[in-house]
Each structure stands twice: as C-alpha cells, then as structure tokens.
Length: 207
Image (cartoon, one colour):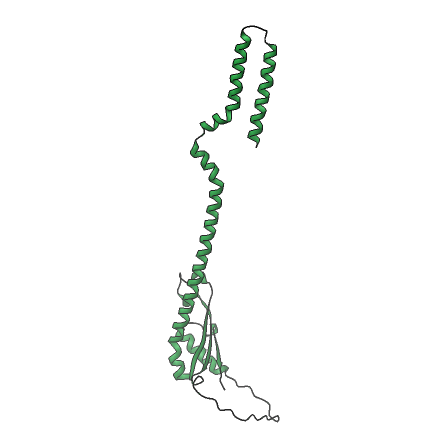
C-alpha cells in the first residue's frame, strides 16, 4: 500500500513541476520540444512500477510471494509428523508392555500353580519412562508390577451353597494372607530379577 502511495505522489509532484516549468518557459520554438520531453518523462514516471517489475528476478519474486505460505505449510507438516510419531510411539509402548506382561505371566504361572495353587488373573506392568522402552532393557525400566492371583480350582470348582450362620458371640478374625503374599512376592522378584518392594501381590478368593 505504501508503494502505491509513493507512486501516485511522485506522479502528482512531477505534473506540478512540469506545469511550473512550462509556465516559466518563454513562448518560443523550444517550448514544444520541452513539452515533448516533459510528456516522455511523465510516461516514464507512470510506467516506473512496470519497468521495475520487469527488471525484477521472477524467481526471487515468486520466492517472496510463497515464503509465508511455505512456512505455514512446513509448520503444519512438522506438527502432523510429530503427532503421528507420538501416536506410533504410544502404540509401540503399549504393545511392548502387553508382550512383557504375557511373557512374565507365562514364566511364573506353572510354578505358582504347583507351589501355591494359584493362577494369574491379571498382571500389569508400570514403567518409569515409556519413551525409553526401545532404548533400554524393560527390566531396568520397570517401576512396579501389580499382579492379581486367584485359586487355581476357582474356575472349575462348583461352590455348594451352605446355610449362613451368624455367631454374634465371636468377633470376626480377619484372615491374614500377608505372609503368603510376601513369599509370593519374593518368588516373583527372584524370577523376574526385580526388587520385592516393586511387586504388589493380591490373592482373590482366598480363605
């Protein structure tokens, strides 16, 4: 916009200057030549933007015109690539954790059944940093393991409904399974090469 204003201003100033010069010139044969020169100069002033455009490198002009749009396009592309990268990393991390949980379960399930009469109902692995799952061994990245166990015969055994008897004369003594769970945690820690404090064991359906 400023360029257009400067162009119009220069034309007006030239016309005013030409008018003053024409008024100062005496009436002679030189006056028509002077008008011719002034007219040619006025045409040059009017055509200055076109001449400047023709003298400009077209590649440079197009580069300037597309710089802003190219920058926005590159930014959007980078953002899209970064989003896709994070989605792929999250999917890969979830796959690695699921695979690790399956392998850890298969590694201890048989001995849990034989030694404790338990099976793994659910196992969840929590890592310190999911971004480093592909860069370091998973056992070094494990923060905690939460494992839920159940009685091995719980799925197949049919429980017989017994009459409910309530004895208000005795206080209910809660069953303590923390000792057995501690043994199981130590066994799992030894098998998985982890610290027992990093393993949380819960037994479902125990007496």
